[in-house]
Length: 254
Image (cartoon, rainbow, N blue to C red; front, side, top):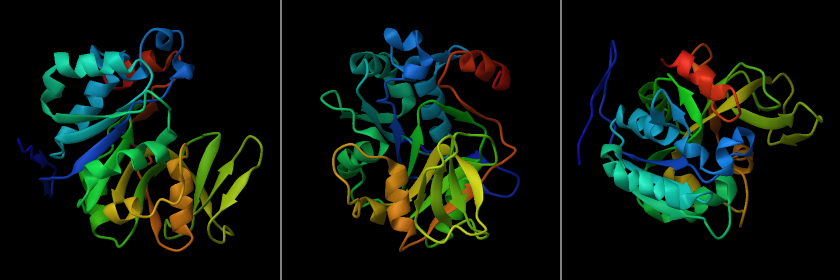
């Protein structure tokens, strides 16, 4: 298996671990493209979102990737085969019978990560210049169940963190709904960036079944363990999930 060294000013990242990319979503915000193709294959500057993120993981030495599929699953599998998995080893977690959302998707794929100490999980429609190697280092240096990439930016739904960046809750800014794991007095809202480093222990304690969100899993663990935020405010970031975002992404990541 190849190893890629990512050089920064002070550190050399040689990260041998596995990752999962969530690529099963319907991509309804990206219509009309997703009427005939999966959002994972939407192209930014001549490369699909899937390829961008497989290569993003390669920069920190991650070459073993699990991808869940549902919407136009055959097109994703064909793209992987036609491109020799973009130089990585890619396993498919098949959700064609039922879309399981992020939590259910990871739980179904958990057997791929048996024995792993940690893993990276990310959404396929995210593009960012976040230094993933530094985020992994921060996670490994802390005794936490998960580390979530977050930013100070506008979003309809946000996570609530205390002064130590410990997850305390979640809120829907549109309707005022909240989910509380710890005391939220004095907390600060951050928007989730769809990238996370997860402890292998968390995969052994996911108390939900069927379709469920990873946010519910993190709130469940935050009530009794530590789930931390990793603030990367200031980095380039875009959720390539709606019309117009592809053009914006091409400009930002030209």
